[in-house]
Length: 338
Image 1 (spheres, rainbow, N blue to C red):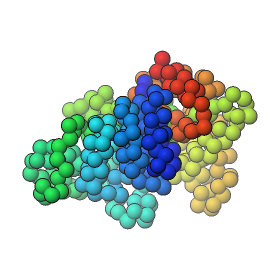
Image 2 (tube, rainbow, N blue to C red):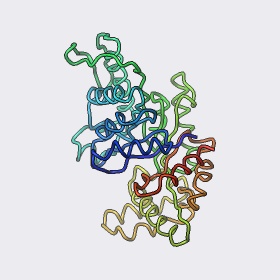
Image 3 (cartoon, one colour):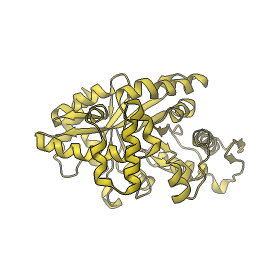
Image 4 (tube, one colour):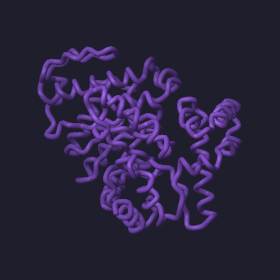
């Protein structure tokens, strides 16, 4: 099992020091996410201030950018990191793509597979100078000249991860991706019975196998040395699960665990603005399925149990605190790898 982490929301000037620290603690990849800030800017700082640790986006919103602009940003970070980039892409949800990003969202699974194929065609032209000739269902790459071509990378192979929760997106990852970003709201049974079979279906249909796709997941963790401390972290995780569960896109997992009624009620509470009532609808048995529970010393074992047979790499859902002692997290990483 590989153990990763995230860059927390911080000023860009602080990223190099934090990235160096995370590498020294033994983390194998540091991921950024696209929310308040662009995900590539901190990766560029992290890439140039580290030597071994991989850097990746979890995720960059694909439909916010053209395939060319995404390919160009990734190519630059791949060069800056000397081949350590993992490009994680996600579709986002229709409301945000259409109403916040002002971009099209129809048939997202089919669109993202075409998007990924187009990116790879662009990278091939960057690397080889071949004439552009990609014409897909949604995207085209038919024109370039030397002024716009950044030229070859010494390490041109960039793994592409696709993020998702539902079977159709998992199948798309099996079709075209090198990895799959498992949503943090997952369970072992959902991975075994829904996600992995869907990835395998997409892989086999395209002459591939399930093991061609690496699965990475941030994991919800309820932890603390006392019951009081665990209660505080549990409240935060329960609130996060309630938020995700209120979105229809994530209802499939609630249905898998027999909680479809709670999911519908969560959506109604969200529409009514009754946010404080939402965590109360997350049942205890679902909390047990969706999070690991224990003391800090128990977390490495709990994470290995969560990953065994279903995940290749994991991280905790939240970034580590900058104020925590280095030795604390160094031992954590060693425990996860043992």
